[in-house]
Amino acid sequence: MKKFKRIFVIVTDSVGIGEMPDAEKFGDKGTNTFVHTAERCGGLNVPNMNSLGLGDLAPILGTSKVKHPQSYCMRLREASNGKDTMTGHWEMMGIYTTKPFITFTDTGFPKALIDELEEKTGHKVIGNKAASGTEILVELGEEQKRDNSLIVYTSADSVLQIAAHEETTGVQELYRCCEIAREICLRPEYYVGRVIARPFIGTDKTNFKRTPNRHDLAVSPSGITTMDILKENGYMTSCIGKIGDIFNQVGVTKTQKTVSNIDGMNKTIEECKNHDFEGLCYINLVEFDSEYGHRRNPLGYGKCLEEFDVKLGELIKVCKDDDLIMVTADHGNDPTHTGTDHTREKVPLLCFSKSFKNGRYLEERDTFADIGATILENFGLKKAPNQIGKPIEELLKD
Image (cartoon, rainbow, N blue to C red):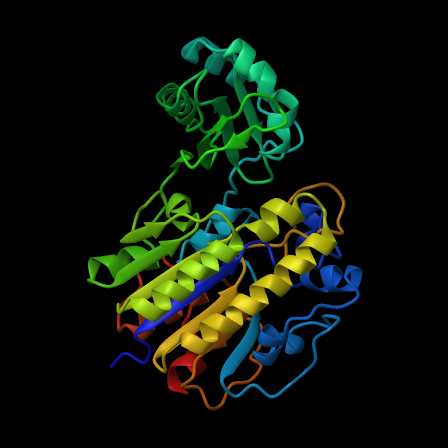
């Protein structure tokens, strides 16, 4: 008998909660996204997360320790070797990654890669550095539009992004160039996780803006995931935000793109209120990471957490007795740390159900994959041989 009919896994992208034991190896000693953000903000107003036990997990200014019988809270360590989006999300669904995806944050892409991309596409490449997707349009958009070149840039993730004007270059031509980049970037010496087409419109740098015609070309997961098993057994895997792209649509039944965290939560609330399904709703809220973490903006990060908390309260109100809500993260991105990279951190896991009666703090767990293992156990399904993780039994026995 299934305990929960629907499980909502909400990934607050980059909201880590303290350094991993091996953080020093990644240059991330002393990082703590949640705690340091709260300190810089003079405290956070997050009553809904606080009511779920957030205050048990770390000394977060503005939170307190409370009784929370309808929720279990814990920290999760990342077993995989990495601190990027794909590694974190894949691990939640049972994949153990030993070799991290290659990133080019500090150096840009190698000259040999850029030379080959120029030769095969017939376009000059400009940029070739880590940058914000909006700021690089201000810097290079007019040059791209004038010369019909390609703006190539990256981030702290393993990603090669190509921006080009929809009228000058054309969407289909941009897609063609990205297909070429995808083929080049599958080689072991590069092995980039995602290539993303970023078309934009506008007349000059004062009004350039990206369009909804983004197109992701990702590598598929390296093994069978929890989503694959759910889908094969007739359960829903409803993905909101960039989840579908992260998994290259493998194991995905339904996908909805989002334009903001608020949009993502609104779509999640809509899915909860009006769609009767059995299975998983998997949500990524990227703005914590893209807008505030990488830009080292702790005040913006704190405001974003407070806005999310309001929407989480709305979701809790409409969820049913046999729903389970799991709020977690995929890595850290401490906005008070040096540089602009992700940070190697543990993540929180807040688990709420109206059916819980004995909710409490649970000891730290060894892997994000315990999320996926719990989902499979709930639906009476077996893990694949490649999968790691153990079910969180307390959630299924309460």
